[in-house]
Image (cartoon, rainbow over all chains, first blue to last red; front, top):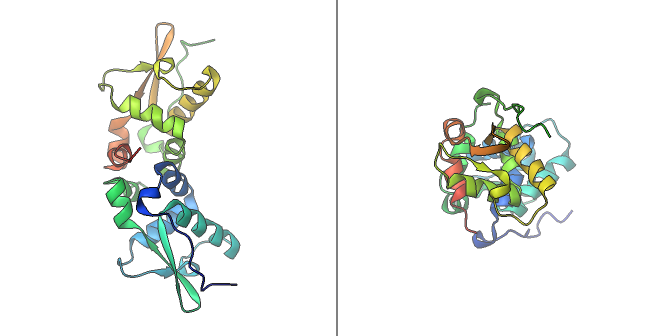
Length: 106
Length: 106
C-alpha cells in the first residue's frame, strides 16, 4: 500500500457545491466531519481513529469521497495518513454553511 | 391528476440534515432552490414556471424530493401547485447553511 503517495485534491476554485453537499449528505461522512471539526486547525487525525462501526475499506471509501469533493485534506505522515477539514476553503466558498450544518439537531 | 390533494410534508422537527443535503446536492434541485430563494416569502411559484431543460415528470420528481426532505412547501392553489422555500425552518435548524450554499460560485 503506497501510503506515502501524495493524493490528488481539488484546488479551492475547483471545488463544486454539488459535490460538497453530496459528500456531506451521507450519515457516516457527516459524522467524520463532525469529529474533524472539533480538532485544532493544525491537527489532523488518522482516519482509523474516528470511531465508527464500519469496515476499513468503507472508511477509506468515505474519506476518499470527502477528499475528492474538497471537504478534507489527506496528507501522508510517516506510515499513516492524516485527515483535516478544509474549513478555510469551505468557509471562503460558502460562508456559514459548514457551521450551520454542524448545528443540525442530532 | 389530483392536484388538489394536500401533500405530506415533514414537520420542522422531523427534518433530517442528511435528507436536506441530499436534496440540495443535485444540480437541478439546487437551481430550483436558487430560483425559489429569490421569491418573496409569501410568494410561491408553479414548479413549471422555473426554467429548466427537463421534462415535466423529472421536474415533478425533483420537487417531490425537495418537499419530502423538508426544503419546500408545495400547496394547492386552484388547479396548480405552488412551491415555496421553507426558509424559516431551514434557517432555524441550520443557521447560515442556506445562505452559505446560495453564495456558492457558479
